Amino acid sequence: MKFFKLLMAAAAALTLAACADNQKAKTPIYAWEGINEKTDMDKLSEKFRFWKSQGLVGVCMGSDNPVVVREAAKRAHAEGLEYHAWIGAMTRGGKPHGWYTVNRLGQPADEYPAYVDYYKTLDPADPDVRQYLIDLYCGIAEIPEVDYVQLDYIRYADVILARGLWDKYGLVMDEEYAPADYCYCDDCVAEFKEKTGIDIKSVEDPSKVKEWAQFRCDKVTELVNAIVDAVHAKGKKVSADVFPGPMSYSYWMVRQEWSKWNVDMLFPMNYNDFYMEGADWLATICKEEAEYAPEGVPVISGLFICRDWKNKDKVTDPENSGLLPSEIETAVRGSLDNGAAGICLFTPGDMTPEHWDALAKALK
Image (spheres, rainbow, N blue to C red):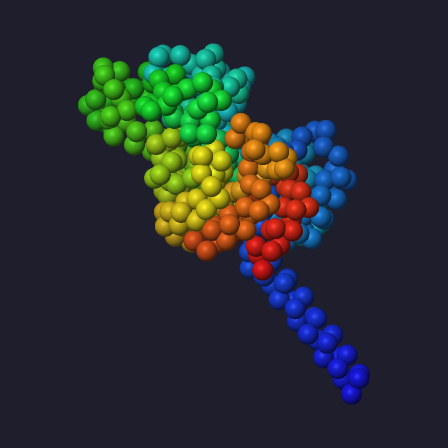
C-alpha cells in the first residue's frame, strides 16, 4: 500500500511538471538583446541556456554582421531557441547623401537628424535604398541557422514623439513637428503631385492633407513587402518591430500602417511608460493590435523592463523606466487575454530575480 501511495505521488508530481511545461509551451516568450563583434559567445550560450530554462522559445539578437549572426544563431539553436536576426533598417549613417529623407524645412537627415544623432533616416521611397535593404536582409537570411530576419526602425522618424519623451527633448508636440516631418525630397514631392495633383510644398499645413500621410505610409509598406517577398524567396521568415496600434499610435507617429504588411510575426513595442500609461494599458493596446494584425500573423507584445525598479520613483526618463515586478502579471495577462500570442522582453538583462518570479506566476 505504501509503495502504491508513493507511486501515485510520483505520478502526480510528473503530471504537475508536465502541466507547467505545457503552459510555458503555450505562451511563446521572446527577448531582444544587442550583440556585436566583442560579445563573448560562451557567455552568450550561458544566457541562452538560462533564458530557455525560464520559458523562452526564441531570441531577437541585434547585429547585421554575418560572422556574429552566424555564431550567435548556431548557439541559439544548440540551446533549442528560435533565432530572429534583429536589424535596424532606416537609421544608417555613411550612405550616399541622396539616400536620406528631407524634412519640411528642406534639411536632409544625414546633416540635420531629428532628436538624436543616429536618426539619420533613409528614404523608403528611394529605389537604391530599397535594393540596399533587400540585399542586406537577404544576405542575413542566407545564414542557415537564422529562422527570421527582424525588421527594426522600418519607418520614418517620429513626427510626434511619445508623450513621455516630450520633457526629455524640451518639446510640446501638439502638432506635427516640422524638423522631424519627412520626406520632402524632390522625388517624393514630385511623385505625390503626379498621383494627387497636390503640390505639398505649397500647402500651409501639410499635416491636414490625409493623402500625404497615406502616401508616406504606403512607401513604408511597399518597402516592407518588397523585403518580405525577397526573404521568403530565400525560404526564411520575417518578423517586424513596430509601434503600438496601428491606428492609435504607429500610423500617425511614424507612418507605419503595419496592418498591410506581409510579415510572418509582429512585435509591437508596447512600452507603457513611454506613453505615460500604467501596466493595465497593455490590455487595451493588445486588443487593438490583435484586431488589426493581418490574418494568421501572431502579435508578440513587447514589454519594457525596469532594471533598477526599487528606484523607479526617482527616474524621469522613460527610456530608463519600465515595468516593476509587481506590474508584470498585469502586463502579461493584459496582453495574452486580449489577443497577443506571446510576449517579448526588452531586455532580459534587465530582468531581476523578482521579475522572473513574477513572470512565472503570470504564466500559471
